[in-house]
Length: 136
Image 1: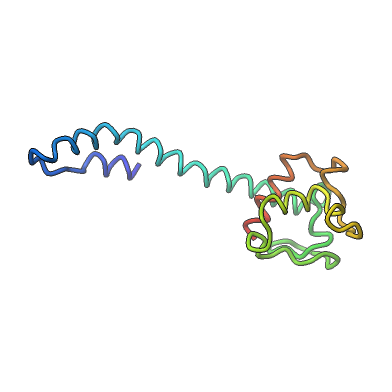
Image 2: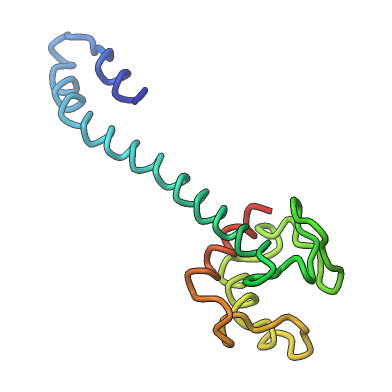
């Protein structure tokens, strides 16, 4: 919205050398406005996926992450697993997906359930949980 207002109010010096620039600017303004609106929509989707992931992670009947992990904002956490903090700096996204899918591939002695392999969580749910983990 602000971008559109800026485009509407923008003026370009009308000297002869600037006529081509002015015409190009006016033609590209709708495209730039569209790109700006699409860019604004991406964070909204990421926020909703992260919020869904948090619900799953805190759900004692589904993700159940709090049974073993301390997670900021969670009540009654366990201490079997490591605290889940600073995850985006510790792991790449694909590593987190693999850990949630089946940590026993990386660590055969892990007590963490293989949520994906055992079909406890769907691929979409695992991705939502990873979106949430990356906010920690």
